[in-house]
Image (cartoon, rainbow, N blue to C red; front, side):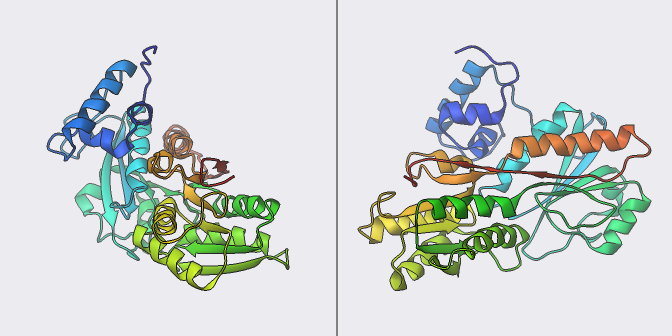
Length: 333
């Protein structure tokens, strides 16, 4: 294999057969990682000539081009650590540093989350958590750019970079309709989740055009246990031939319930599709068919927006909507 000087942590993870978060832990002092996994990552990194970068902190002596605040919820989920890695690599390539702040479920982005002395250092904020109107106004006044990540709040003074969640749900629905499924299950995320609402809306609206198709839904709250229990609930009262999960983690739970508690053969008798294409989706244990969110492309667009804003005094907020695509693996025919 040829050395690749531009190799990323995603490339290393793929070659080593591990998650991107495992690659990050391998090169983070004091992080928890098994010796076996660490050896695989190191060997893959050597083959690709990968040079790890350590996440910047506010105390860094190198100022770079500026400090970017990254606000993420659910940091314990399997999705956002992979987002953080891609954002970090893209922003670092343009000489920006990162200040990471995490939020709890339902928490808004306001001045309570960011101390004034830190806010003064920021040139931009990339957030998956919705800000208050007062926070947006104060950032606009201080010339701090706000970019919505993977959602669009439709606030005139903010930019956004997002996967087209509604279209992603429609892609799954179209696949199931073309495969002649008539009894379909849907495991949704939290009721107040924008991404879940959009992923399920596209799915439901497309299937509503076909009177013969019966749709049965339940909530899985974007958790493994939620997906497990969601599949249990749906299959206890309905004879389904396909299930769509609004994120990959729920799909993992759904698959495990089916494998452990039913005689249904996947994908011959039951097809399952997730959403996100996190690294675990390609693991042999799941081989999940899913809608891929192009997080590397999205991260590069975030960096481009920051660069454009700093270069152009007349910069106008922009919104990028990127279409995902269906990645076919072994949970579909």
